[in-house]
Amino acid sequence: MTRKFKTAEKNRVNYVYYTADGKKIVINPGENDVTEEMITLLHTYDDEEVDADRREDYHVPVRFEGYSDDEGSELESRNSYLADTSADPLEKLMDAIKEEELEIKISNLKSALYTLTEKQQETIYKKFFKNMTNTAIAIEDGVSEAAIRNRLEKIYKNLQKKI
Image (cartoon, rainbow, N blue to C red; front, side, top):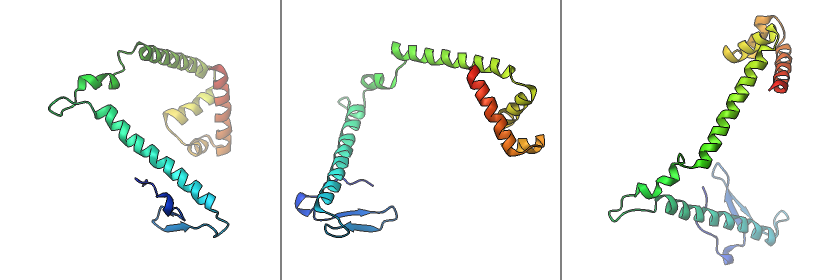
């Protein structure tokens, strides 16, 4: 839980905080090599966090929920551009590029899978289509789990080069 207020300058003689389980810990200058500068620094960090929380609490609701008509209901037409990016040509272009890149990668992966040996293809099938663990594949193939792990690593490196 964050603080909603700052400690007054005159009350900054120690630093108090609470652990996750609710235990109170007090740090005092002079104890365990703690200096007043350390206490001031800890309070400064907390002040910055409190200020940031206040800014966020203030700005976020004001920007997204602050518009209303005379009756108090939100005017969705004023805020619709915030949620709807379908009209943004740059966003459409970026989506198209992402889709095209994904299609190319999938096509390259399919081609690369056909270049694998039959044993490697079988291992990939068991791992990704049957969702078998390395141990289960090893038991079925009669080899060690380390052998399956090494086989998969070689397959991944091989596919990575081809994609």
